[in-house]
Length: 337
Image (spheres, helix red, strand yellow):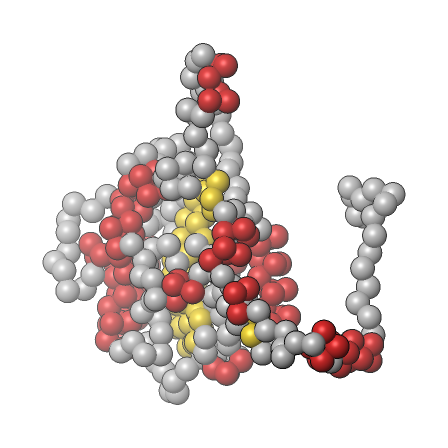
């Protein structure tokens, strides 16, 4: 059933391929007919019949900046503060809402660092980006202090997913193998599902650093008595990687999957750390299953992080259903092009 369509709704059907080819040939002849050398428009990023880059002005028209300011003159008529909302059951901002909310309107950094409510049970953050609109994102590094702050403020949560905004190595910083084990760590008493991204899961990063990350994650899991699934993942051009811990009906399993390297194995220190979690002590070393897989998509087939998302057990937590659909539609059409 399709709801919300008016009697004037119109369905656009693409022309046959033969017609498209005819139109394209006609398009290429337009400069001669118009008396122009070419149809290039570098200012708007149109070069050699292809979109080269978007101008800052065009980016701002699409993205813009939305400022929510209660001190605007339009609000003066109220002569009082806005009423307090006693109960908020959920807040959802999908990736389809392209306009950027100004930092002073929704200061998520302060919210995570100082004011995450103790009544909050689920938090899902996905810092998405587009190469054309956010060319600087490819070199941007996650905020390390924000990762540490989220680790501290997440102790009351049951489900948490944070993609690209923070790195897993910062979230687990206090449990890093090179650090002395802190006996004063506050446990995540209620946490059941955790998904984080890490820049260390990359073919150019040495296995030593990756192993330390997996050990730190295992140390943290020891303070998560209700943990059912933890996934640490990463993806980008030519690389996709995933580490998963799951405990279904008392059958713990760790899985490593990536699309690079050959004869990759999880080292004994990593396996030992995960096998000896407090909840496994009734069966020391005996009931932990270890799986190492090679992802089916080759490096040349992987264009974005979407290649990893499809393998996540916590996929519905990492991305809202509509955002998930949009991503895979874009990836599919990109691969066709």
